[in-house]
Image 1 (cartoon, helix red, strand yellow):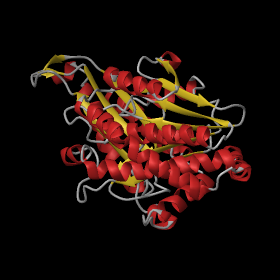
Image 2 (spheres, helix red, strand yellow):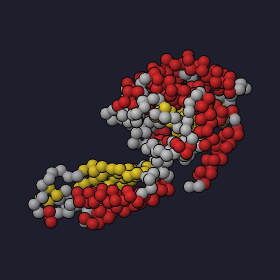
Image 3 (cartoon, helix red, strand yellow):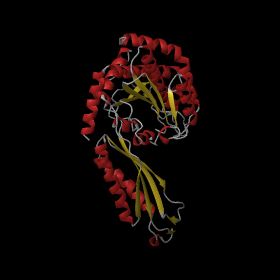
Length: 397
């Protein structure tokens, strides 16, 4: 089999050939932003592209209309998986750069396929089309449906303003709280039970809780229904809250405190309290063997990546890829695509996500992700080490 330098050279040659086609695909997705679970155009163009390039494509996979799997195999061996996201945000389109995430997965999968063919390597590569990351947790549904069981490792990249291979993503619980009181005329409030008092009490006491939280924990929320008219004592109010913590264990403890606050507010005001939990997003547990291999390839490309301790001084919100890291050895790394001074989920980042400069940096990261996957396919010791670390992670839970 060829050595890694020969493989790198071949990938660079193929990347030049594919460059325009990949860039146009990225722009196409960027120009057609679609919200979670409604990524019909992205699903179509991505599956058509993968099929055109020799992948066996399963559309509408796992009973999810805009999910897919694109697979290529040269025979029995290791199975490597990559993820593509492609949903957009309300109002600002691809302000999270998911068109670039889509392309990074496509590029890595295609380059891995080409190397499998060229150098007669046995194994399988899969691209998972994962819809509805933005607030809906599409991968959570996919994990529940055993979507990733057939892959040995899972990898994906996210655009940002710095290169990280150990980013901190927090575990997340989404909680809806509702209060049911008794309405009456505003001039006789003593005849009613004010549901607004309950939600305001809950919101206030969450604020008081913050001083006792770990510095890495977060609680933020909104009142989604605070009543309908000043002269009517509200008989119903509701709110939605995000509770985040550094890991699932700390999240469980913090969420219980928040639920206690909600219930206490109902008790104090005489309102009935209803708490509804949404699907949980886990924290990211990057596999060190995979992440360090990726870093080596990135540094060989001239990219500087801070040390792990530096990276873990900042958190990046939450993502459903965290759930994947608890079912397979995985990583979710950040690629610097420019746009300094602006964070994701902004119009500036959206506009940057369609530039050639952002695309070039993202496919450089995708190449290094592909090389990581190829090394997993060709180095049994790397896969063994990654799997052993993963077993230790699961045993510690």
